[in-house]
Each structure stands twice: as C-alpha cells, then as structure tokens.
Length: 336
Image 1 (cartoon, one colour):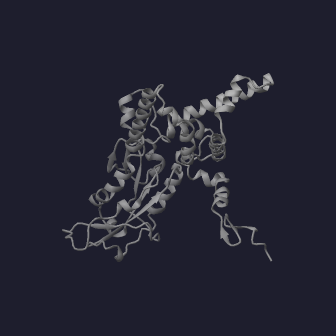
Image 2 (cartoon, rainbow, N blue to C red):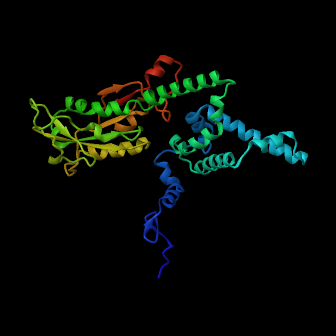
Image 3 (cartoon, rainbow, N blue to C red):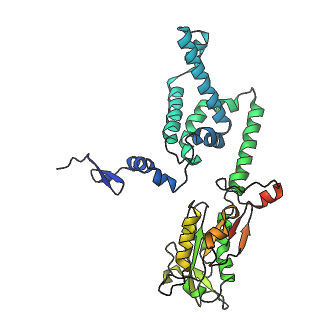
C-alpha cells in the first residue's frame, strides 16, 4: 500500500495522498523551459535590474544601497577582525524584524530569478518588506520634498506607459473587431464563421468581442454575431440575427511566423474536403511583426482593415531607420 505522503506524477501534476499541492505543481511547471517558453523567456537578472525598480522606484534603490552597505560592512569586519564603530551602529539599529524583511526580499528575488520567465507582478509579495524597511525615508524631513516629487513623477510616467501605451491596442481592437469584420463581410464568410488570430500580443479578453445586439432589437438586415471562447454559436447566449456569425478567437502568444502561417493555411486550404475551410481569416498583430510574404505567401492577399495607435510592445519594437517620426508611427496594432 502506498504511503499517503507519496508524491505521484500525473501528466506533470503532483499529488500527495490524492490532493494536488499547488506550490509543488508550480515548481514542477516552472522547472521546465519548454513550459516557460510559451510565455516568453527573459534573462535571469530581469527581476533584479528591471522589474524591481520599475515596480517600486526609490524603494528599490534604497534596497540596493542597503545590501551594498551591508556587504561592505561585513567585508570590513572580516578584514579588520574586530567590530569597529560602524559595525556597532549597524548592530544597534538592526532588529530581527528588519532582518527577516531583508531575508524575505533577498530569498524571494533569488528563487524567482531562477526561472527564466520573469514578469513584474511576480514581485508584488515583496511590497510589504520593502515598505517596512525603507518607507521611513519618504516621510523623513531630510530630502522629503525631493524624494516625494521623484516618487510622484516616477509613478505618473509609468501610469502613462503601462496604462496607455504598453499593449494599448489589444482592448480597443477587440471592441472594434465585431463591427470591422461585419463591415467587410463578403460572400459566404458570414455563414461559415470567422477565425481571429491574436499574434504577439497580450492574452486577449475575448468576452469583449461579443455582440451587443439583443433579440428584442431590430437587426435592419445587418449581421449580428455571437462569440464564445469555444467559437460555437449558442441560443442560450441571447444573441440573434438573420445569420449567426461565430468568432473563433485564437491566442498565438509569441509564436514564430512559421506557426502563424501553418495556422492560417489550415483554415485557408482550397481543398473541398476541409470542412473548416474559410475564404479568409483575421489576424490582429503589431505592425512591427507583420511580414506579409512569410505569412501569406503568393496564395493569398493581405489587407489592413483597422489600425490603432499608440501600441507599444517592448518585445517587438519597430526597426530603427533613422527617422523618429516614422519610428513612432510604426508603434501600432492592426487588424489584417
């Protein structure tokens, strides 16, 4: 008989005594590069040199200075072989609570940096330790106005960047895609449904693409559409029209152009035996990654139906050709 504490692996999921253990499963998942590659790979120092100051601003720089100061003092003590006045001051001002906060921050950074997929939100748990350790610097009289001014400016700039510019076109394109696709509907596309690929964008919240037209509203001969995550039409969704058009939304994440081409061609094959055949598909992607020849080849044409800017994607910045205006105008997302 197996012990209830035995660890069992079932399709990369670990159980203990029949119960799934979330931390253990998280460790197993994040220990495989292939899993993390689907979400994007980063250098191991990204948390330390990019994400920490981006999230916490001045608190991160106080943390760097504190760690550097501690290392210098420890080296000084080791070289001199005795506790000098500096070490006495360090011991007097330290306490177990601050030591625990330092260790929590350092250990958290170290463990999270071992995985090559590093998103800023992963560091949110160190918010409390950093505030406990260095929040007093923002309320002290010395340099108070300068630090608070820097703190406010820092957060306003990041609010503009991450709130408006970074991946800023994903939500507007989803909201607009229903009208855009319907407006350009031709032939039998309306009855066969529509496939929409999101390529090199953040995960699209697909519920935003659902129709707002209800049963009690007149259709005036126009085509409404119903969209679900599985791409099927359902009467229970309370959307109706003379034709029910389905939007199949597929998130290709950061896949290469070869993957996009395969997915597109599978739905555009001219073989009559392919029941999933489409006369067209729709791709939503940053302009900087849209390479028409490598994706559509000579078999199909590509047209731009919609453009939204600004849309900044730091993973796929436009190529610099010496023209600042053209470079900034390339930061956009398009519906093709």
